[in-house]
Image (cartoon, rainbow, N blue to C red; front, side, top):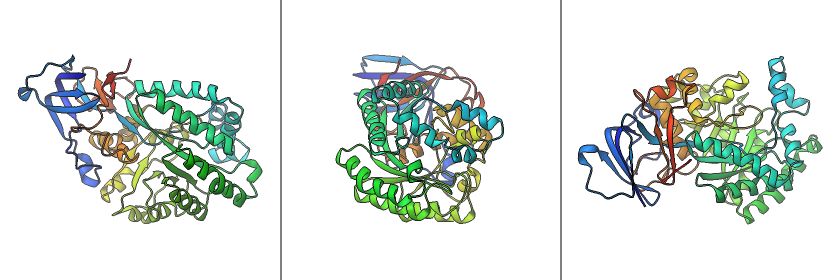
Length: 412
């Protein structure tokens, strides 16, 4: 099956295969081709270039993209899409003055979601989750990481990971699974942290690895959740079973989680709303991808990741949604890109790089996703007619996507 897209107003994120991520000043550079064509063969990008160089070809399908932008689909490297119910009451509680921490201390937050999840059947959990996945695909996401972490029991965590596997089997979007049993301490282990960590290390991780249910391991390293030492212990156990670390750090406090992440060569460190000069220094000259979650900051009214300081220090940065019921009930990467520009002062070029090529890197998909590169998966966004790609973050409340292509097929 060959699909030819012609008369593309501008083809964004055109890269050589050797470019796996962009950092520092390079994040402001977004290679493009104006008046371009692109060829898809058997689900992969096989060719592209300027229209005047279009070779003779007989495609099965031709798409005229006159006046439209084509770019790689969004790579959302941090989500919690598999959950039960919602936490809309906590949303109202925060409006009325309660903090995220206060809600968590009274049994809300993550523990609230865990209670609902363990009361929900696996089939119902799948039905709820697939609706969210279908929504984000329509919004242009072609690769997504999904975490467990709302089970906090052996069976609850396994149930979540089985649902993620089922989504992976039933949808063309690329899905990576992360085990986040260390999301919070269940009430019965509130005074017995060692007991719950032993359960994670000795029962959950071996079972998950045996059944190949996860690619990564994650820990919520934060005051009131998991200490740096506990985080290191869990990362080490996951690594022994082939699970690469991706960790929640610096959402509310800087307690040394970034340094632990670099020590254990985490694929990414995510949140980063609170960053010190030492934290930025620790990330220099490492392979760790910092990930910002601006719609979480928007929803909780907490600080935004200091993108300008980090990029000026030469670091890379990825953007993701943090789609979850408590702090970011949205998987809209278009809003994330716009918010990064509006609130974090990232340029459109930086934000698009962060949401495509760097997002792919943060999921270990750098060689197959995130750029217009020959041989990469044909996951594409075709916009409606627009004046320029600046309109994507500028018109933040408008849906400017006309067509989404995942693995070479149009998503309807």
